[in-house]
Length: 331
Image (cartoon, rainbow, N blue to C red; front, top):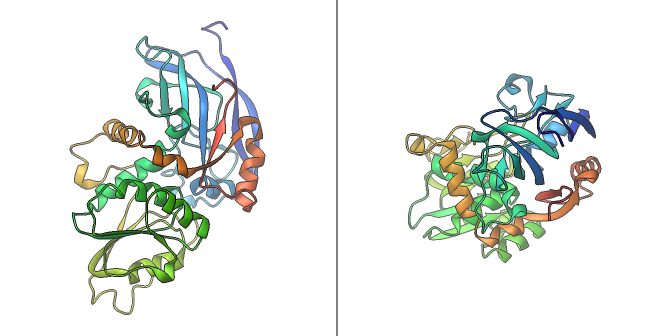
């Protein structure tokens, strides 16, 4: 391979409503301050990526919801994704042969600025490292509203974000922690991680904090019900173009409840002046040393199968929290 010639690459594109395909393209040779990365794994986010697949990104926020290395525009065609793990093949000497995480779409090779890469510790397996995205989102939510020793905390929704949050919270000296989800399979997964898990109707109230990540109106309403007076609900769900009903009547005001929006692109206010995106990612990589996070990856498929995998995830034929996509030569 001539290091100065453009490189042929393959990437996944969403081309129309619930339609995707692998497309051929080119990337230029890396310049000063850039690196060529060969993908080992990428992860499919069932939340945001399914909204993109269905064309449900609202026009009003389309520019703000762009992935860092997205190509094309919402709704279609668009190359979208942000959970990529690879190995540096060309670039600065200190990065050559190192494994890295990048907020890049599903593509077998890519060239990015070196500052877009996060080094993966030797004791974090490549497949587990694709979870850096949801764990970073979870860490940011903890910075938005931080639990204190002795708090009663609930996580509503056992998907990628909710399960990542619960995995981090299990380290805290809390009075109580529950993961709440109507799906028995997700509750079983949480229990295997050492986390108490219950159905919504069986959840214990009096919570100081509820982290809501179910992306359902029912989950949001139940989360508010579970709060103690002056409690905090942290909203992590992104509803896309759907406008959910929020129960702000009844005793919402008299109990002085609070709802805080959390979103990963901006560092939580409490830590904004002490952390950068790079240092936040470094903390996430330290957390991912814990093998408990492996429970969040519920299957693996080859890159060549990705169009069918995403279709099956969207239809529910392939239940999964995070689906790992394996690229050729990743062993």
